[in-house]
Length: 175
Image 1 (tube, rainbow, N blue to C red):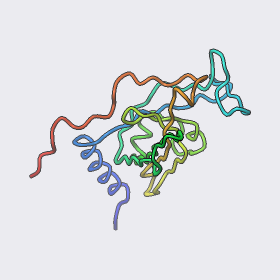
Image 2: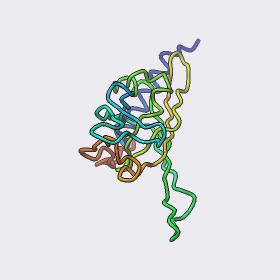
Image 3: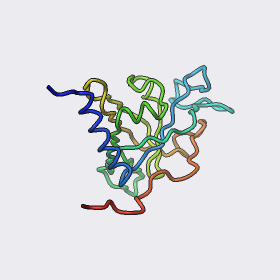
């Protein structure tokens, strides 16, 4: 008989080993709900002008299993179309839980959050918790690039102090 807890523990152990050797991370910003620090103009779909606007909690570093950057399929043209990159991030549920993210099993509060990867800001547009063996296993997040200087004029843009995504300084040792 297979013990699912032992199997999940072993899977997480090997994925974390991979993460230590060659992994990356994202910087996650939780949205402060309206009335708790954010103000928002529903008509214009932007933060309200003034000292407030949409606000975010300080960033949380979350290690990732896999990050896929999806380049815009259209090309930048002289007519003014601005390419917007998309992202798909896969993380271990236990890492998301340990990072301190509030209610990581719920998708609805996550849909106003932002993340930063490779110096680019992304809004979350899809948040999926996968697996049930015996607890949740993976979190898959999809997002689209935001140009903060254009799209967040009245908002409190999360500031990235230092880059969090670097290539490993050494290659893994192959036996």
